[in-house]
Length: 221
Image (cartoon, rainbow, N blue to C red; front, side, top):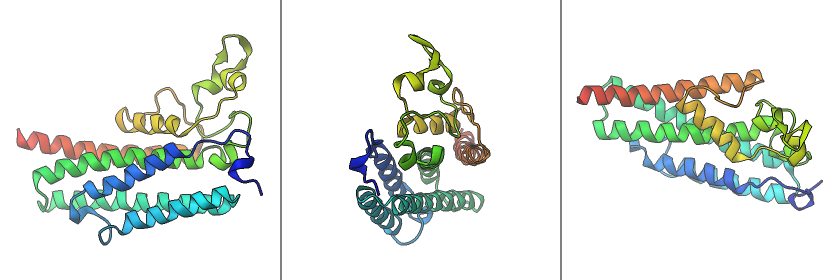
């Protein structure tokens, strides 16, 4: 089994780790009634699985690393959907104050971006453990510009081939941010069905949060 040190050009994991930690931290910014489980439960489980994923990667246990990564995402997704459902119920039942509503909607919108960016990063092209073992990224669920635009100095090959380019977490964060703001993939076409369905879900969550924010602003006015 190859460990992280045996890969010629390993994909940096720290941007994804920062994204996960940011999403977990935002959970504490939600009103207490919108948090999933006892205080600190979700964050504690996320940190535990992150530690397992890190150790497994350096030990070359890629299946364990991937499963721990999926566990982290499952927990963050549960927290996101639970918070959104509780926010909606609080709005319908008039059980949440205006400041808490505005804060919760903004937090859930930001969490939505981070969680789905990590999902795209984890799933596209077989995931980071598979992508980093390829010299260049040519196939995946998303058609990044580097995969379609020819290199200026080499008109017969794409930028990805010419530069040995592979997408990283920031590329998927860009896709997720655009999906939540423009409700479309903008300059990155979506190729696979799973990615299309996932982006539809992300857009629905984003629209819901934005509608709640706008609706509350209108009521205040």
